[in-house]
Length: 425
Image (tube, rainbow, N blue to C red; front, side, top):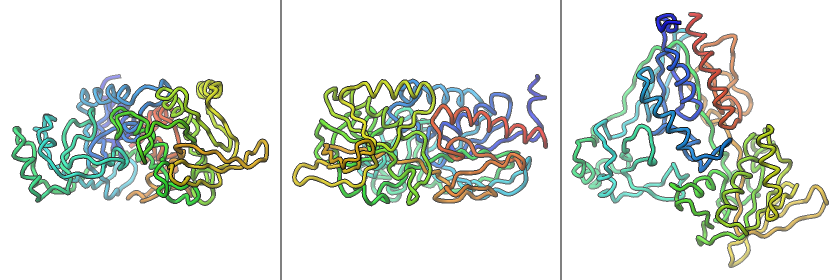
């Protein structure tokens, strides 16, 4: 098939969201000849995967998969990447959409070489959203070492301050421009794929589990950042209250999931996330006791089932079938007592540990703010794909809870659906 035949005359696809699903969708479409606009609201691509310490199936660091994909994007002129960008409006019909996109200022242009001189002189500190606000970073920052695009960001907080002048003066490449303003870009595309991803469910809403009340209770995404070499503790798993090396940790499954008061559905990946994080603890602290409180363990597929069986064989891992009713903090120690009813024995279990990890579920980003397009959602905020109508599709966790492998498979399918829309036009 020649390139001319592969590419219709009106061949543009818009992919909204630069996480693993969006990247896969964009690349699969671009590599068979279609022009793709990939937009992302953050200053970098990679989404939630970029925040993980390791991910399934091979338990490799995110740099492993992202590096290859970033190279594919760099090598493909058909992919146009726009970061710090948000869709404001989508009008039109399948095959012909008018899209308005707001581009927010980065205050750093393409001259940036990531030399870091601006970061050196900047004194303003801001919360690190990449590290889930577990630490502070400079107001002039590179989101993470392998960020794509490889370009610094100036936080809006430093605009108009002495730090702004210091950063600008320190830059030898004239890369810092505080005169940048937000602007609107209008695109005409034939299909739109929404890969808007997910947010960790707000654990503060789960009143009985103590998050935000007791410092030694963290969420599973916080654990990923803590265990990650480029995280707030440089990879060391430590109690937030006193940086102690924990000798006992409890994982609380279905924290907010499968609960009609919060997320009524199973988030698919939480059980496996806790089992994976058990290996993080085990690597650093071979003698630590690990208690996993669960309703039932869901290990979808043969590979995950084998992983689960391997964890169960660890003599320092205790699986307790029972939903956690409440938690409390011991006076003076910072230790946490977890209370649950053991569904097997019927007895009330009180287990005191030094740290608790809540396996909070995934909520679609669109649940918080509906997207500016004619889309259908289910009751939980996931986008329902209308294949009969066509034109706009949801990929990955915008459509349903999924792991990385499933998200990639789904994204490849949505790239094909988008292409079919253009071919039909």
